Image 1: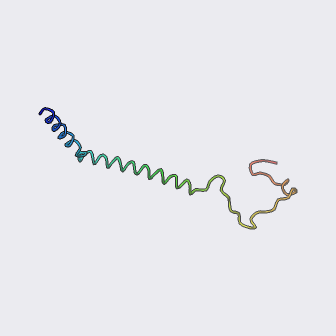
Image 2 (image 1 turned 30 degrees about the vertical axis):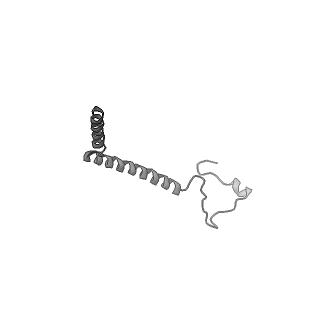
Amino acid sequence: MKKITVFTALSCVLYLSSCGPAAEDRKAMHRRAKVFQDSIANVLQTSMDEAAAPGPNAAISVQPGSVQPVTPATAANTVAPNTKK
């Protein structure tokens, strides 16, 4: 009889404790989940923005006719903007 009483009491305790979190705990869980989801969304958005941005090796489009051909004679007369001759 003792075993049945102990087993019944243990079963009741386990059943009542498995009903789920209290309402306050659920609200806190939802707040934490929202922060977690927002954090993941921000990371994904940042990585998508970085992927859409041109990289350091991206090709630069040049309009036809905007570039002058350079010969050795004209290259010798060219001075960089930050240097003096």
